[in-house]
Image (cartoon, rainbow, N blue to C red; front, side, top):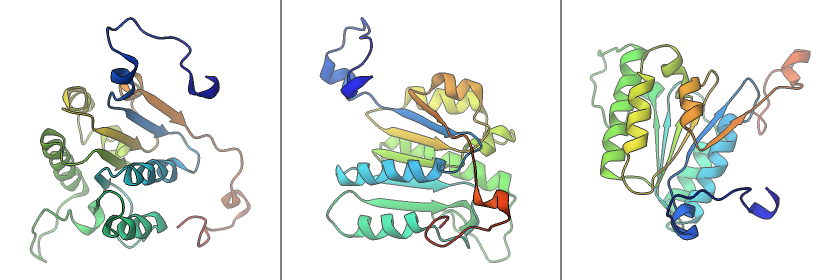
Length: 201
């Protein structure tokens, strides 16, 4: 695909411009490092285009403050690009009001997050979605893969969605427009070194 030129052009009745603005479903999967990082890089590009960005983190601990979160929150509040909303399952989803005593399972929380994403897609709330580590609730059987595919297929407008995490279901990768598998060749942890500031978070 030299210089961004497609190797083939489908006979779908669309103009080049129409085809270029079709919504993208992207999947970053595999055992290697960089799946979420690549998705947040795409979110930066979306922010720069003035698009609204919604980030939904499904697995990472609420105590883990990743650098991309702070950067995108600051950029989203700057008024220069698009808006950015960041939601973490580990903190309790921001749209769900709970008492301090209420404790819910991770499965129930994941289902709440997916229910909100469905509402947001139907309302075209964001132009760009990062569903970070969303493959895991599907892999564990908490969220139905066929339902996810149906919702993504029928989403209105031009809403782009990137899904990250290991063990992406085959049906999802078959459906997606862009699939990247991160493979590990070498990692500092192989030599007993833990994650470092500025590298891992």
